[in-house]
Length: 292
Image (cartoon, rainbow, N blue to C red):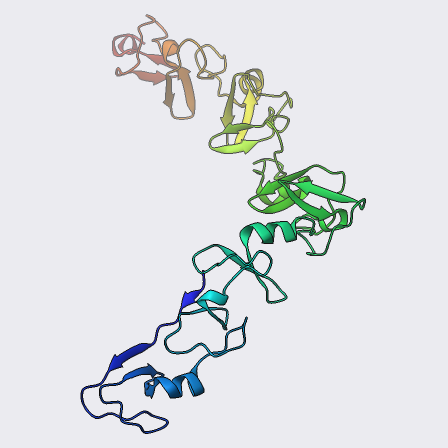
């Protein structure tokens, strides 16, 4: 909305002269502008702004509206098309200087391209989107500036993007290949992956929906983990995977055991969380160790 002018007008009780004509302003109405005290006659003649519509001065007693360094009498601030008063109404300022109400402005812009603001001629190639119109060559990707034409596109706020630019700028990137994930995908440890990238490190089998485990930032299917990665139990010689029965592990020096395999070699007593003796590659309870 335009802003009304704000000048100070008052009545003097002590002697005070007009800045221009030096008339005594005692008991008279005056205007204070730019820290100068001016009688209303000099203000109208020397200081008043000129109305952009009627070209007459906007006197001290008149209501003034201004917008972008242009001024109007309140009664002159009307739509250039329908002449509706706009002092307290939404309006738009045209490039040619005309002021229009919202309805007339919309009607005036109805067939103008949103890209170049030129008229879209009837029968010409054009694109309509969300009740707005573009020349076909003006409906371009915000990022690469290429015309969309018959391609698919995506909107982000008021901006239009072709699919490749949208994916490059906004889509999540796969943790493995660093390329955009345009559909589907999975999340592992708060990182996005393509389903086809989330595969076993050894056999390349897809792991989405399957049991897997990780080791040193790589993922493995259960079979490859058992065969290639997992430590072997010093007791039963089978891999220690953490899957299924007996997930607890006992470690001693360079050896590892399933907890259920950590038993005395002689009497088979479970030695998990108990004192034991390691002798010639085997473990013994204290009693059996004494009999060796």
